[in-house]
Image (cartoon, rainbow, N blue to C red; front, side):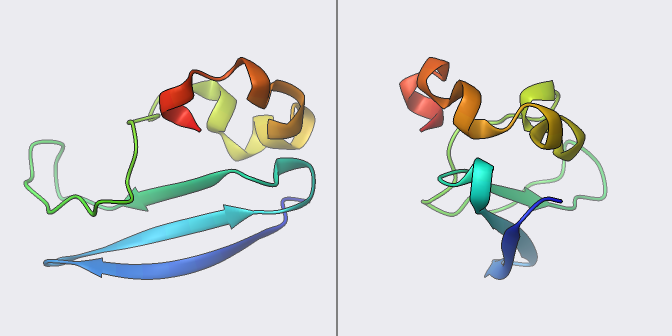
Length: 80
């Protein structure tokens, strides 16, 4: 089971879903925004870090079997 709290954060015309993970994934916070297409403009909140779309480490299915606590020390500083 993935243990997390979800927060909804409005930024301009969009709402970001911000997940704060707990348990074995404690310390991981991720944000997601739904766009009508990948070129759609949006206002990026200051708290948003690097893009991780497509990085399998961050998929929920992988966080179950290989939690953040097992690999967070090897994550580049800009992801922490």
